[in-house]
Length: 114
Image 1 (cartoon, one colour):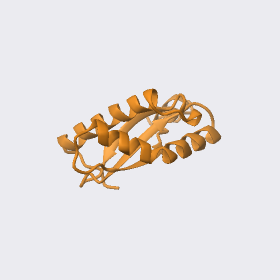
Image 2 (cartoon, rainbow, N blue to C red):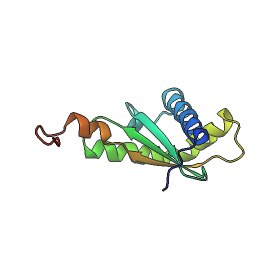
Image 3 (tube, helix red, strand yellow):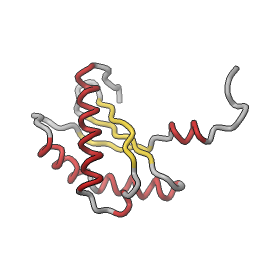
Image 4 (cartoon, rainbow, N blue to C red):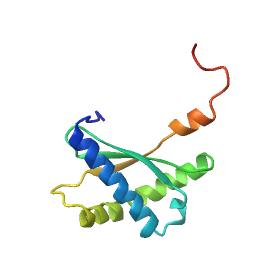
């Protein structure tokens, strides 16, 4: 997916991120999604696909459960976004685990490049 770097897509991604995070806190009841933190939204060039990145504590099993929960809630989240946002066409939501923070926290000492 080629991400768009336009101001409009960045603003739209931030708005989608904020609304999705609020819906996870206020409306979603799936226990697999407890303590899931959304870290970013990147829209592709024509804004038809939104890649939503998330983090969650625990191992690979917990990440897989959270990803499954997010994919199951995709329709609910899109309909909630449609209610909250005034857009003609909502992007398709795709979810991916964001391991950037884990890489930073658990980086092996001495692996930095001088």
